[in-house]
Image 1: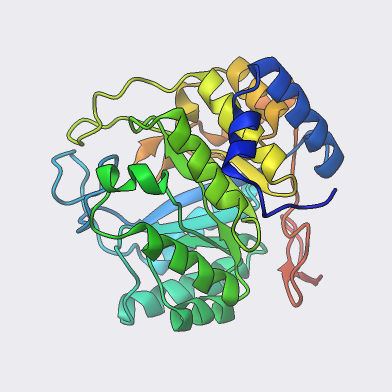
Image 2 (image 1 turned 90 degrees about the vertical axis):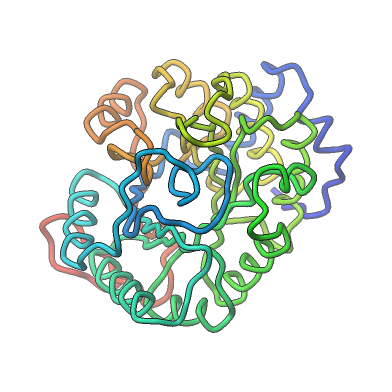
Length: 336
């Protein structure tokens, strides 16, 4: 299937606004053609530095200016991070993402420590991802050299809606970070959040931006807002499964080879709703008790869901980067 990065906004809108069953049927057909049937990537996200963030993201309980009850802590000890990664791998995760509540990376001892964490987690044979805020070209190159596989930096919403949600960094700041990540040879992970008070047109515009980047993101997380008391968006209504289906199915049609990740908000979705999302084109999840600071289904619940739906976990490094080392549980490392 030919990949397109020249979608028009009108084309994306026409796809998105199809009757939902027709949209899901088309997305499912493309998914079957471009992705392994019944295979879902299992990822784990750990907050290695929580709270105290100077930004004003209206949805985020880690912003220092909001009173949300989140207890701030500095970088976790390396041993604790490595133990969490090991537990995630033993439970079936193949990607381990480390998040820090920073506006941007600074060239200091904390960044040096994160680079060391990347090296250690990489040694477990996991795909290592980080979400650390904005970065420059040099920092992206250092992360790549340490063994980073992917970097997450979400657009969050459309350019038009963005200033209603965040004022402490610009939309172009986010796009520039994605450019630095791509230039360094790191896989790009970028998506957004729905339920922020945006319109369908905002959702369409965000998907259009992602699908018309110079290259499609390797993975696109689709998050449903988890309202947190103390944040400006605490009273937003729950996102419906039909809204999630439109986002996931449209993303699958626009970016057929991308991993579409069913992300935040899954804790509130029964298995029946999650099954519809997999049918529509989702093929990746976060598993584990928390997504940074918000509740998430644990490993046992997801294993039961996989068994019920006949899903199988995607193997680590399916497209193996040159020089990567794979390690099976209980086995010695082997060169890929």
